[in-house]
Amino acid sequence: MNADDIAREHTAALATLDFDKVIAALPDAINQAMRNAIPEMYTPELAAEFAEAMAAELRNPQQDEPAGCPVYRDCTDTSPGHHDHYSHDVKVTGDDGGTILDIGMVALSGSEKHALVYLRNEEFTDAASVHAKTAELRRLLDEADAMADRVFIDHKASA
Image 1 (tube, rainbow, N blue to C red):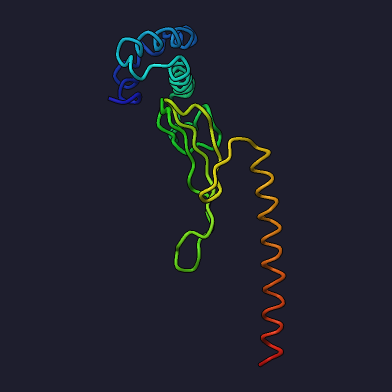
Image 2 (image 1 turned 135 degrees about the horizontal axis):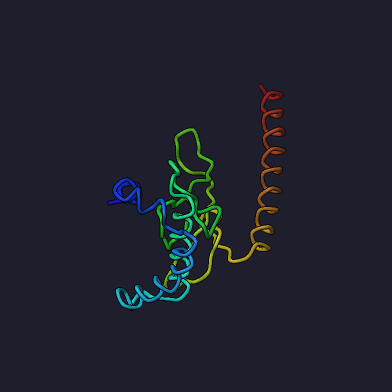
């Protein structure tokens, strides 16, 4: 049963429910529930993240579209309460559909507590490192454009 089914089934009760009080109680309730139900996966950060996701769902119960991730703006997982964050959808492909270059982000729960941004197979854990590498890539792309101009001018001249 999802949130919409519950809302339809309990319309009268929901009309009088103080969502602010429910939202205020969520962090403690989820913290305790996770400690009891899944102690091997429990972390205070994961419980807080899950509580925030549930609070966001309660604040916006009538949305047709799923709410975005409450933690990372670039996360493409829109399922409520998710705890692994990612975006793998930014890429340039060739005419054959193969990936030439892709970028994305990952922030996993559990033992890996840091977020990272990747460019193809290179991973970065801070913005300055990403900026340095993208500046290098811009220079490379400028060189590719200049090479293309020279090669095709030379090709025309030799034809």
